[in-house]
Length: 458
Image 1 (spheres, helix red, strand yellow):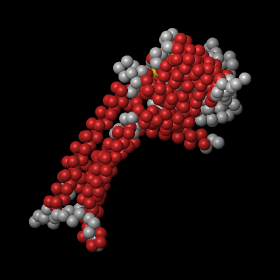
Image 2 (image 1 turned 180 degrees about the vertical axis):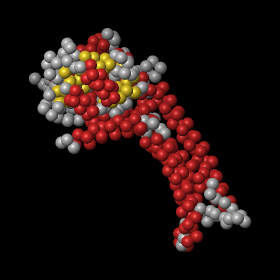
Image 3 (image 1 turned 90 degrees about the vertical axis):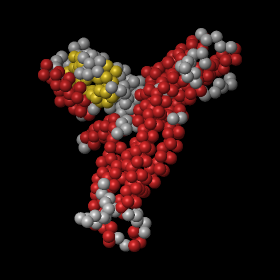
């Protein structure tokens, strides 16, 4: 068991690092540039040694022109590829701008994390740099040295150019697919489920639903910088509190925003009536801030509510007067319903981690189902109050969640949201037909709360 913990800790750290790198456009293209330079240097040296000894069956498929022809081919490839690369970057920027203005600024990360975009840019830049690297070695016959045409290298450059043409076609098709709202919501939904699967895995820690009682003599641990809490190295932090003989409650969850020198956590000694020394407290504060990663934006590494926030933002944007697209809002609410139903099957709420003796040593705050439900429903209900289709979609969400989440806390939260939706609908002055349809949807939610999907005849 002790061997599994370091491996699991390394896996968590790698996930946090990979999520951070995946949202950047430059790592894979830069790696492709370095590899293409190395390949251009190494392959031309291989050409110098093996080209003269290649059999006829092989040379028939290789480039057979002279030095001038090789220069023409490589120059054409390099010149066209830098233009295509610029076009690809321009289309990507336009797509980012469209997603930001039309749907939500939070969706930009979805596009910058697109591996197909990374791979396409890497292919174009690699082809351009490889062609330039090979071009520098081509020479005509001179008195001091013979002509040299790297047949294998020029042939590979030609193959890369063909691959780049196909890549451009597939990139345009991929881009047309990715800017569809259905695809965006599907990608956000899938990423949110992956995050929930990582952050809410059942690790056997104590299961408690209520927030802990903080002792009166607990000491406050402050954040050293401002920003969003992106991730917590819980294994390192747990080891820290065990060594210090303390208990820590981190009452900020990944995704929360805070300001430097404001409370981030509270610490108190494990043994009653003890008190942490000044040195112990300073060490805890230092190691806590080292284990807590703060960034300028939210990330899906450990933030289980981030995906729901993105989906809700799409619904809010669609309901704005400038967009006025309730159909998209209804579609987004449907994704929120599916995601909430999935989250309801996992262990939500504060996470309690224990030492080898089963004593609670580290408490990490995480949102519970009522908080997530409020995030998904409150703003669309307010901004879509005048549209019966939006209110009906919210009632459908409550009905589906009531059927899947059977805990008393979840049922109480759903009943509370149902009451608020009914109150909102009553204030709008809908006509008789619309009000009756909303009443039927509200009755369906009540039935689901009692374990009935349809109204049963008495």
